[in-house]
Length: 184
Image 1: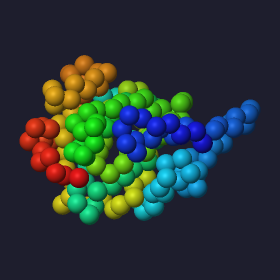
Image 2: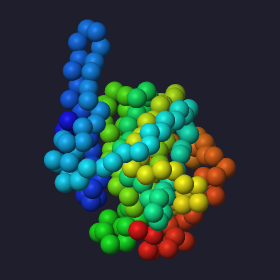
Image 3: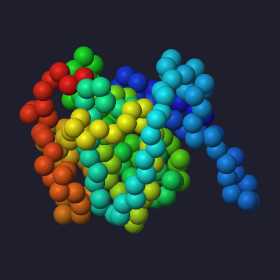
């Protein structure tokens, strides 16, 4: 596994070493010791989630607050997405800044998203299967959402606005200026 730091504290790109031959491929998708050796901490994942989405589906930007805040290790096993995070940790120099990365079945990259970040993705392929590990359980009362189209974030979702498909819940997500600054 190869790890790469980003400009955002503890936001880490993880690229597995892939062993391919005429039968297919094999790779280790997570190794706690290797992650701890690079990052200096070891997440304890307690929940795995999976979603499938069609082209244009945008899920996010989601986060949980309080004792139910979550770190996530996200990846795509079929198709391609643009994965986006927004730093909501007011003590970080990247506070209120967005970061994006292409995740796909082809590149096999993963992104470790630490607590304190809103997270979302948009499907760029016909369909995409998205898998992620969480270090805390889902809690509906702690769930929050940040508007994907907040102009202050200047996120290029790589789709025309008319192609974006949102859930009813995500249509109600909050603008960044309306979020308290002390969430994390």
